[in-house]
Length: 375
Image 1 (cartoon, rainbow, N blue to C red):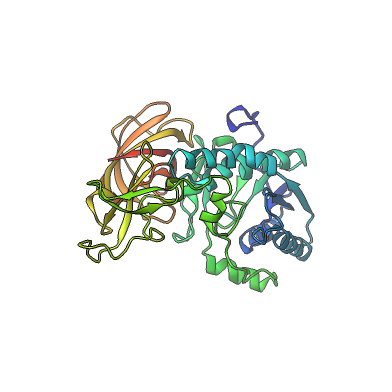
Image 2 (cartoon, rainbow, N blue to C red; image 1 turned 120 degrees about the vertical axis):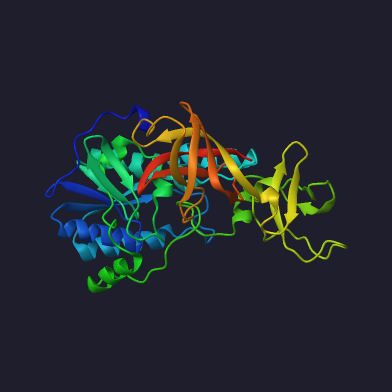
C-alpha cells in the first residue's frame, strides 16, 4: 500500500505501549532500542532482509548483521522478529533505481528506501504485530504541534539524516520515533559501551541501502551492461572512452582514465554533463569550471512533509543538494503540485539530476524534490 493510500492511524505511542525498533545489527539501532526500553516502552526488535540477489557472492552482510541483531535483542531481553521485504524492495525501490540510471540520472535509493520500506512496509508490518509505532536509529528529530508532525535537524550536524527522510508523510512520522535526536555519534557509542553492547565499536555501514558495500560499477554492470562511448570536451574534442554513461555522475573525478593529453595541462578532469542522444560523456578541467556551477535548480516530484507548501512563492528558505552539505541560502521561486524552481544565493557545484534538493526553514525539514535540471 502506498503512503498516499494508507489508512489513518492512531496517535503516537506512549510509555507502556509497544514500539518495534528496526534492528539492523548496528550500534545506532541498538542504542535506540535501549533508550526506549529505559523510557518504559514495551520494545520489540525487527530485522529486515531486503536483498537476496547475491547472498553467496561475498558482498551481502545480512547473515552477520542478523547475528548482531540477535545478540543485541538477547542482551536487552527483547523479542526479535525477522521479515523479508526483498520483493517489496525490488518492486518499489530497485526497479526505479535502475530506470533512473538508464535515463542517465543518478538516483538516491536511500531516500526511496526510507519512504517505501523502512517507514512503510516496516510500519505496516509492525502495526500488524500489534505495535503502536516504530523507531529507528536515524539521526533526526521529531516534534508535534497543532499543525502535525515536524521533521527537524538533530543534535549532531555530521550525522543528520533529514536529507534521506524528506519524503516521509504525516502518517509515517506520527508513528515513528528517533531516539537518537539529541545525541552525537560519540555519545551513542559511549552509551553502547556502558551498556555492554557487543556492537558498540561496529563500523558504520555505507553503500546502497540494504545492498551494502561493493564495487559499485561492477555491481551496476550486472543490471546495466556496458555501452562504451566517447569522452569529450565541451568543444567536441574526444579525450577518452567511457564504459557507459550510467556508470558516471556529475562532478566525478576518479575513474575517467584521462591523462597525458598533449596541450591538456595538469588540471584534473571532471564529469560536467551527459549527452544521451550521442552516448557521450562531457568532461572539463578544474573543479571550479563554470560548467560545474549552477545557481538555479528545477525539481520534479515535489513533496511537502506537512502536506502543503510553507507559504506562497517567492519563499526564502535554505536547501541542501547532498547529504552533509551545509544548508545553502536560496529562494523558492515557484512551485505547483509536482514541480518547483529554486535559485541559490551562491553558485552550487556539481548539481546532479536524479539526486534530491531538500528544503529547510530554520531547523525544520520542509520536504523536497528530485533534481530535474540545473543551470
